[in-house]
Image 1 (cartoon, rainbow, N blue to C red):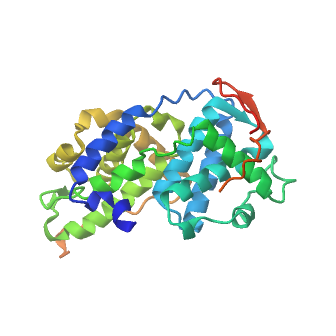
Image 2: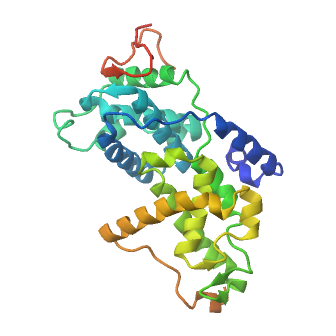
Image 3: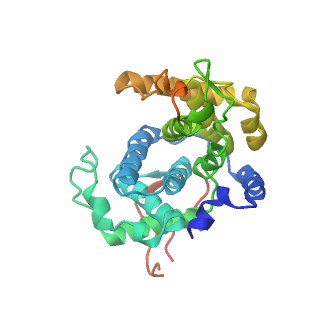
Length: 299
């Protein structure tokens, strides 16, 4: 199972990457016309909190947000059940992407429910409510939840994210390559989180967003060249193609630093050192709007 998940270490990784690039062409356009876009950021932040607390994989996290985005883009959910929707999307994603022991119980998820104006009177969601929502989400996607996301592409790109010929503040990386690579991975994962915060990143293909995570990390760490040849060849992206998305990431990173502590940059001298669902369950009745022709009914 571990080998299948770490596809970038496979001997045929290049062929798998090509298949993923073909598959991402099938991802539909996100219209971004949901009247509940105001709720997206709190829901995504809550999913990210659960991912951190429960040690859920980033691939499951990105799939959960994908399901949330596209479901909300077509259907409106009652405010009292928005977190139930996020819960269902996360559990579906964990069941699909992670090991069985990673699937959190409903009681655990209920314990993390935030107290908002819409959940104040909710002690926790019941299993029947959750099952109905999960089935509604799965039926909406026609049970097809195998989607390539940024989290699938990023580890592949990180394999060549640093080269010994790179310069940091004008100093050759040389023997510090492994140390520098740790910083690049840390910053790239940060920008991977940034890419979940705004639905506008859906305007870009997941592979391009993953490439931009690496490019943004190298810019923040003052590594030159910004986009070396090995990354250009592996990703099949030129730097000019990445710039619009990179600019969005860096703007959001600046806003984040204004609100929180700055990211940890590499020391200037570092490069000088050595270095089963029951058939009687109904669709969720709290999905109150329909903007895509998707009809809710009982089975």
